[in-house]
Image (cartoon, rainbow, N blue to C red):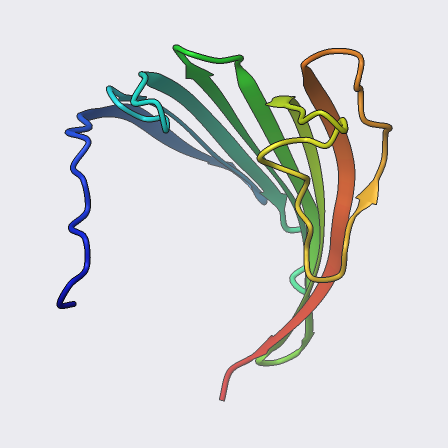
Length: 165
């Protein structure tokens, strides 16, 4: 775009390493993974940031028409110029085959965050929960006694339908 200021390159170097695994025993299936990542200039002050990410998903075919599952994701951020941050996302759900070629999926979202800094009013900054389109329900009060805080919230319950033609 003419006249626009060019973006400043931060020269960020990123290194990532991870592993995944999948196992199945009868009607149970487990998928899991982990990766670690380092950014040499990953913050607004161009400080180093390390990230650890783990995830796992367990499902079981109870009936051919009903498959419950649970997925857990965790991310931990460790900036060299700030406090550590952890976020856990839990998603329990169940898929139903309503009829041939029609599937319904009911899923919930629960999030547990710890270490995000507060602003002067005690509001989590820069993260203020999921703020999903339908709003969020805070399951525990914000801890405003320290410069960082934790927040547990039940974000949403969703029902999806999918079909094939």
